[in-house]
Structures are given as C-alpha cells and as structure tokens.
Image 1 (cartoon, rainbow, N blue to C red):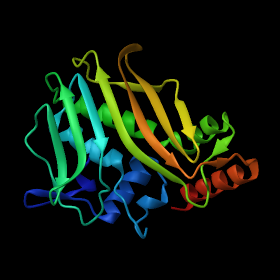
Image 2: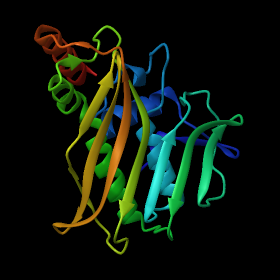
Image 3: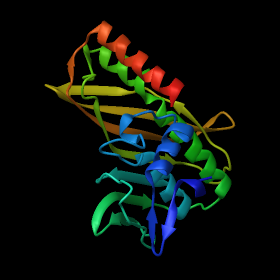
Length: 230
C-alpha cells in the first residue's frame, strides 16, 4: 500500500515532495498547505512516517510515537533494528521516537487495516473536529497563520489476533492558555463491533485568537475549495 509513497536510496528512505503530497491528499484527506508540492517549508505528513513504522515493525500491544523533527524531501531516513525503544533519524537528527511493548504482529492485513483507519481519522480532524472543539471555548485558529503541530500519538491493542480493525472517534479534549493550546483526539478500535483497543493523538496549537464566525466561514470555504481543486 505504501510503496508508491517513498523510495530507497542505499540504506536510507527518501520521500519526495510529490510522494508526501500525494499521500496527504489521496490517502489522509489532509490538505494542510505544508504538504503542498510547492510549499516554501514543505513537510512530509507525520501519518506517512507512522505508516512506514507499522509496515516495518508491525503492531505491538502498546505503541507510542513522538514526532520530534520535520521531515522534508532532503531527509535521509534511517530505520534501525526494532527494539522496545528506537529513533527514526536523518543525518543523526531524531525525526521520530518510538516506544513499544509486547510481541509485534506482522500480519499485513491487520497493518493495512489499522493504517488506513487511523490515517482517515487523523486527516478529517481539521476542520470537522478541531474548529467546533475550539469554538466551545470561544477561540479559534488564526487563519493568517494556522499553526497546528503533530506532537505525538499512542495506540493500545488488547487483541492482536484480529485481521481487521475499525476506528471510531471518542471524546476529544482541548485546553489552552493565552495563545497556545493542546488538542487530544481520542479513538476506539473495534473488530466485529467489539472494542479491541484505543488510542489518542496529541497536537499543539499556537496563534489562538478570539472566535469570529465570519473568519471561520472563510477558513472552511478556503479549505473546501482547496480540496475541490487540488
């Protein structure tokens, strides 16, 4: 599923602007301008890095991912031998830290199922979840500089014997102080209607401002127009 979104150069993995942008728009439904091919500060989607880790190392009972650095088309990614803790690096700089517990399940069907379910959930967070969640507290993202940073995520799986998994959104959380805040998106993992796991995604928000409905309407219109034309 991921072969068209990266390439190998010797011992390293490289993701071009075109590959990162294609993954964001076609797989993750993520139209963040940072993932545009011509973005001044292009950034590979964190969900693509997460997906590559699952494909290489499998799914463990407990997994934690910390997004430390911004990966771009110049990054030469090194994937080490798997262990309970390891880092994905580029030129000795840590890009992602991974912690895991329990024996890994390498079933490609389960890995593909979890990857697709999570990435689809993650991509729809903006604007469908984040904007109304912040609006409940009378604030919003600054449309001029919408800064939302993918900080970390965690997954717990009770039953790895399954081959298919469905992800269902759970109660999200938003807290802020001044112009900075934190968003936690929670989800449940289901198999045949039964809960088999859970997880959450943490994001940092900066440039928070007072809520303005006209600005929100313009922001959503801009976002929807991008989806329709890109």
